[in-house]
Amino acid sequence: MDFSKLYRPSALNSFQYIAVVGAIMSGAAQLIIRWLGHTQPEGYNWLYLCWLGLYVAGSLLNLFGKPHDPHHHHHH
Picture (cartoon, rainbow, N blue to C red):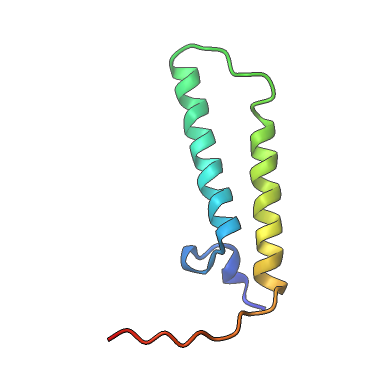
């Protein structure tokens, strides 16, 4: 089992990548909201749980999913 599929950016699948970028963007938005002195929207922290769930689902697919049939793309 290749655990680098959990942390190596080039090995992440789409679900994992979206979850990581989403968590980073949510964190940045939260910092901007605080910096501007506004109150955080109610339930905002649930976003992180959603990103975590998407990352875990993507990780399970990445680790245990069947590999795709090899595609023969030749670039000249």
